[in-house]
Length: 366
Ligand code: TXA
Ligand code: MG
Image 1: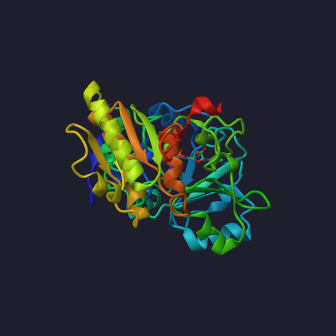
Image 2 (image 1 turned 120 degrees about the vertical axis):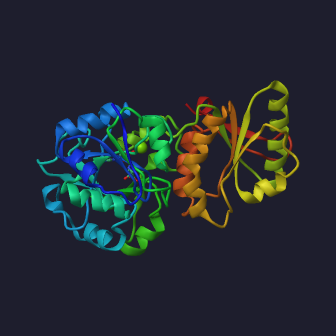
Image 3 (image 1 turned 45 degrees about the horizontal axis):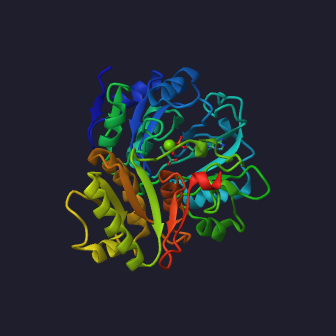
């Protein structure tokens, strides 16, 4: 199949026609690119799973535009949800509701609930209203690869697999939406994103975190994450990645030593680090070592927006071993650290005083 490319500003009529014809279209959002199809058509939704190579028990988020009737998708839209929609929509917040019978089980991965969001991206909203349909969409990567934050990333994974990609430029946020379950007595964050716990609590009071996403949770936690998609190997570059934490000098010394040793062994090494740590490493790294700059520690938003592109760049550069600076576990860094821990399959090395270094690995923790 030939994949049509729609440039920024070009007409979306053909893409809207494809959606109405139960076909798959990749579109930009403020978070990551989505792989969209008509949410209420089983045939269309099956085409998404097929293109993505995703297991079909993984529920999709249904995307809507202003004016679409939510009552046809969700039951019991309570006061809390209304308040959150007023405050954060359009924006990177997905709300989980009880679903209506109109939403097919293949859209929700067999669940009785449905995730709904209104993205803050004009191209996406225009596409949905032109098509006049709610659009189910996962991130537009092949299953297991980092989520795409540019249309070229989508092309890398989906060329020839889908009929159309809409180029809307780089995604502003760069990490997927916060997923919030509002079906119970207390709202629960199932996936952290740019709308943080503190932002939510300011509006609606106490919000819980699904234990499976806490920093202490082991990657193979016996506890099943409530957002089924969170259990898959995600975001990981092909090389083995390890997170490191410690003082700047401890991290710099460790990185310089590892990079030199890999270089001697002919291994292409990589590093994902903040500008501050890279400043300290200037002149201390061997040639051929691949560096990805996350940006300044003072700009958690910029850091978040660069992570997925950097993970893809490690693959392009052929990095076999990768080190990544761990970020402080602040409210603003929660989503970024959640994705980085997954990319590193939970490997975190705490650099201590000489000899007291600790590594927690999947193996140790199973
Ligand atoms: O920012 C985003 O949310 C992007 C863009 C394209 O909108 N979409 C996205 O979709 O990240 P996806 O399919 O890659 O991730 C959806 C996440 C998964 O972890 C899934 O398990 C969870 O949301 N989810 C969806 N519906 C759910 C439901 N009914 N109950 C629990 N979790 C749900
Ligand atoms: Mg995804």
